[in-house]
Amino acid sequence: MPAIALTLPPGAEPGPATPFLKWAGGKTSLLSELLKHVPSPLRRYHEPFVGGGALFFAVAPRRAVLSDANGELIHCWRQVRDDVHAVLDALSVHVYDRVRFEAVRALEPLRLLPAERAARFIYLNKTCFNGLWRVNRAGRFNVPFGRYKNPTFHHPGLLLRASRALRGVQIHRAPFEIALQRASPGEFVYLDPPYDPVSETASFTSYTRNAFTWADQERLAAECAAIGRDPLTIRRAHVLLLRHQPHDQEEGHHRGHEVGIGDLPGTAVGCMRRLLDALDDDRL
Ligand SMILES: C[S@@+](CC[C@H](N)C(=O)[O-])C[C@H]1O[C@@H](n2cnc3c(N)ncnc32)[C@H](O)[C@@H]1O
Image (cartoon, rainbow, N blue to C red; front, side):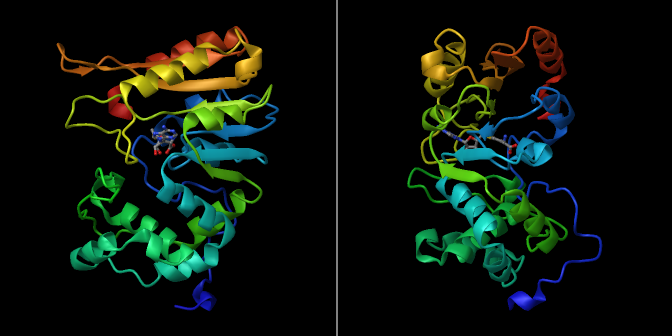
């Protein structure tokens, strides 16, 4: 379908941008709590595990650096920023149907045009089971078809608003260690890493070919713990870290969540404690 068909539905614009992907572990339900911890004025916003970017869209920062280790995800974010009309055109040819889904899933993303590759990502995200993004060891997307009444994957208003919010935003494919190095003194870093593995089979950590391991969680915690102690290494950025506690094998459930902070004013510790109390498994 040509770009001329991109007339927005009534009331779709203008308006605040919201996530254009469904992302496992997205924190939309916690936004009001999280927003209390975003400093004002905000110098620059960093989100090294951006996923669907729920907090990024809620904050709508003018200066931001977003990154994630998932290359297909980052390609999609960049295309929405840089060539949203081509992405919408490419999305308009997709159809919600099991056979078509399986055909699109089988496509090799690197052989597609950039906009087609981003459209494939959005289509699969909106039509697969639970909006999960999970890949096998070879890096191939392997989530099955999802049953929905009428999934909306071609949504011009949503994508155009997201594209506008992304103007001037830096978007990188990067592991968190590299992303953390981009934070300068006084900037804000929001860290929402993958869940800890609950078991070898029931893992929510395979957003990328290399699952996020317990050792990764420990490295991330160590980097955050260094904040304030070693300003040369970690640069005293304001950090908000959501940390999911490991699964309690004996009791059979997650032990809860922990929120770590770095270089926030003392009064923020109480807010963090309340946020910690508010976090429970049902809301994730
Ligand atoms: C819990 S999700 C983030 C959800 C996001 N805050 C949202 O609102 O949608 C965790 C993200 O971490 C990414 N990730 C996994 N391993 C990573 C790594 N080593 N470095 C950077 N990102 C990683 C995953 O691709 C996933 O998008």
